[in-house]
Image (cartoon, rainbow, N blue to C red; front, top):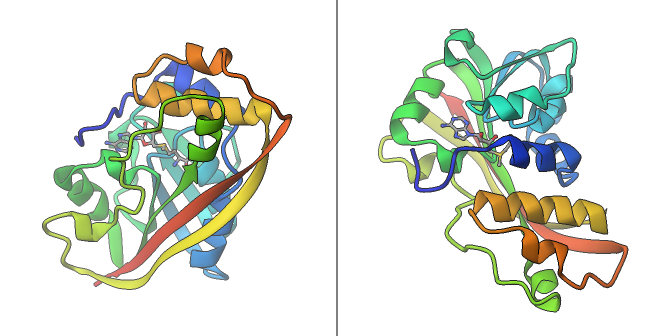
Length: 224
Ligand SMILES: C[S@@+](CC[C@H](N)C(=O)[O-])C[C@H]1O[C@@H](n2cnc3c(N)ncnc32)[C@H](O)[C@@H]1O
């Protein structure tokens, strides 16, 4: 397991359920275009935002997350099966997606997940990084941690042979959100860092709407 918390608890799952930045569709449309798959496995699906975004690209989507609290907050969909039980995962898939989850996954676990991908199948490592810094400075909150690698991909693992890389991109973007949505994002970030969220409640937010800048990170591979 990586150094960061993988214990996404009930409170964090509530913040995830309340709001996620509208960036999943943008990233997956860049990567998958008009491709279509039989079984997409979404590892670290959280409350299902990434799984729901995979629906147009696959006949069946399996969303897996070890946090039962996250799975309990997922949005049902007829072609998605969610589970927190590793034993319930299918033995094979032709699309394997790590959306914002790779930072929590060690080499041994990665091996277990990638074994499920058929030869010729596609693997996606992707995430986004929201730049909260300008807002935090304005409202006098401490900067976020800088040690979380949103761009993590197979090259960060010692043995990543057997995959052909196709696309590696870092792309700037921005999105608008309300003050309530911004607070949900900050609550989730602070809780994930083990910080008290009281400072967010007492911070002097001045506006009703915010434009946040973000970076999209995505790398895609084919299994050889
Ligand atoms: C940043 S969230 C991303 C959630 C979702 N994919 C999304 O895009 O909204 C990371 C997720 O990875 C999950 N996770 C943590 N450790 C994991 C592991 N070892 N294997 C798979 N998922 C893990 C967490 O429970 C959490 O829900």
